[in-house]
Structure formats: structure tokens, C-alpha cells
Image 1: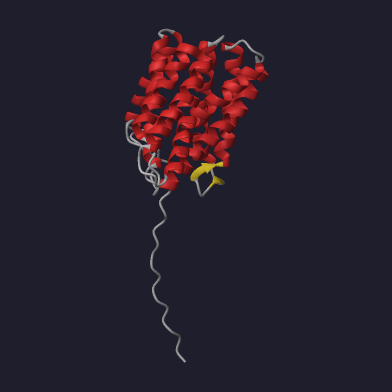
Image 2: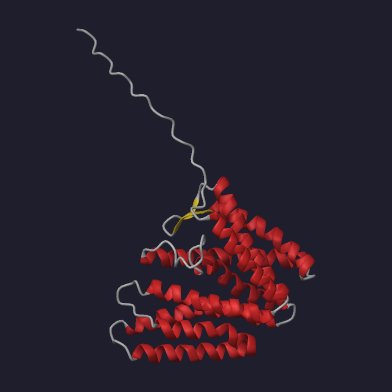
Length: 286
């Protein structure tokens, strides 16, 4: 019995090595980041109304993005106009009257949104009202807390510390995730977020927090370390929360209003939660 001829082997090409890519227009992203960063610094340390204007714009556009996203869900009709207008006024109220004025503005906004929605179709009324309250509590209210903090003792330095640490959290987490990321943190929500990236965020943010506490706030070093740990956790929760909303409604970015970045909420997702926790931490440490 003669042996069967062995078929010629098919040459295989080596798989190209994957290289990390940001998937964004890098020059545009850098340019937008520099402009926004300059506005924040100018507003914090030189012209306070600028930071209020930036916060109001972020609150308004962020509310618009989240409301549009939620309205993609069948049965939801969140009132867009009143949510955006009242949300944009939260930082202004916080700057003019502090925390008390902010709470009054939130109450007034909820009343306006409820009445507006009650004048519309009855179908989906309660879920739509709840979604509107959720949106205003998430985006403009948390962002306005930064303005309340800004008005207080060492306000500019404290807000600057929170913003720098939130940005550092994203930066260190991205670098660590690209270089060493292997274990997804929440694969169903954000497949690219890894535990290695989270560890990188923690290490980098703690270092930044200690430096800010000692050099900028003139506080004990452990204040910065505690703040950093809590802010990293809060920022991660904020990032995953926005990713969950986007996944639920089937979108990649909240909008395309910021070249190279996506939407405003794609940049504020971690910052708003960090501001809320930072506000509580500074109040406790004081």
C-alpha cells in the first residue's frame, strides 16, 4: 500500500504585532486639551468669571449630551431644553450664592422639568422625569460643586488639585493599560479598562496628590495620598458609569463637539465624580 502524498504546506505569514493606538486625531486632541487647560488655569488663578463660564458651558453641553443619549432609549422623552438651560445655570448660582443657592437652583430646576414633562405625552412620564433628575444630579450638580469649592478657603488650589489628579488618573491609567494591561476590569461595560491600568492610575495619582498636598496646599502628605486613592476610585466609577450609559444606548461617543476627544462628557465623566468626592474629602479634612 503506497503512502498518500503529503499535501504541500501552506506558508503562513507571521501575525503583525499590535501597536497601541489612541484611535483619535492626536494633534486636534492636544490642541483642544491645551486650550481648555489654559482657560481653566486662567479662570482659577487670574480671572474667576472665566472658570464659571467654563463650568457653565460644560454643565450645559454635558447635560445636552446625556439627555440626547437617554432619549435614544424607547419610552424615554427627557425634556431637553429645560434640562440644558437650568443645568447650565447651576455653576452660576453656585458662584453667586454658594452651596445654598446651588441647592435652591436644583430644586427650581426639578420643578421646571417636572412641569414641562407633565405638559407632554403621558407615556413614559415617570421614567422620563427620573432620567432628567438623574442627569441633572450627575452632570451640572456635581460640576457646580467645583464652583462652591472654588469660592472657599484655598479654593483655586483645591479645585486645581482635583482637576490635575483626575487628568493624571486618566493619563497614568491609559499608559499603564497600554503597556501592561491584560486583565479587563469590566469587560461587558468597558473592555479596554484593565486592572493594570487602574493600578497605574493609583500609583501615579498618589504621587501627584502628595506633591500637590505638600507644595500647593501646604497640607500633610498623607492628605494628598488619601485624596488620591478616593479620587481614583471615584474617577473610575464615573468613567464606567458613562461607558454603561453609552453601551446601553449603543453609541461610541457622547458627541463629536470636541475634535480628537469626542463629547464633553467623554472628558468630564471621571472629573465630575472626582469633584464630588473631593468636595466631601476637603470638607472632612477641614
